[in-house]
Length: 183
Image (cartoon, rainbow, N blue to C red):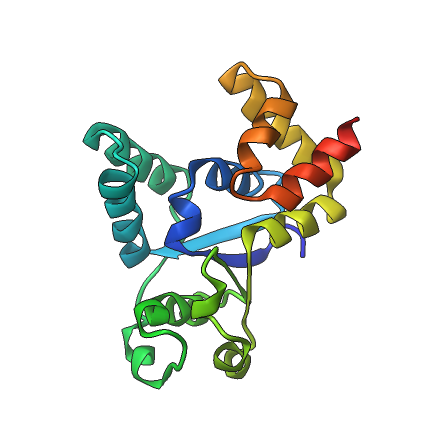
C-alpha cells in the first residue's frame, strides 16, 4: 500500500481542511498514497467552502490553486461514459466513475452510505471512512503519520495534541488512538 497506492478523495474529505491537510501531506514525498479527484469533485469542494463553510472567495480560490499546483496528476477525467452502468447513489456516481477511470481501488469518503459494497464490488473498489483509512496508514507508518502531524502543528503554532483534538471532531477514533499513543 506504499508509495503508489491510488486513492480517490470525495468532496466531503477535500472540503474538511484538517483531514484533507493530513491526507495530502501523506501524499507528498516520501508518499504513502497517491491522491486523485475530478474537476466535478473540486466544484463541489468550492461550493462547500463558499456556501456551507463561509470561506472568503479568495481563500477558496487559493485552496483550489494550491492543490492543483501541488498535485497536477490528481485530476481524473473521461469517466462520464461509465455513469449509466453504476448502481451506487445517483448523486455520487460521478465519484465511483472517476475512481474506476483513475484506477483507484479505494474511495475515501465520509458518506459511506452512497457507496454500498454491492455497487463497488464489480469494479474491485472499496470505500473507507477517512478515520478508518488514517488508522490503517498509522498502523503501517506510525512515524510518518506522526511527523506529518508535527509539521501541521508547527505550521499552525500548536502542540500535536491540539491538532489531534481538533481532528477529533471529524475523525475521533483516529485522534483518540494517537492521543493515547502519545501519552
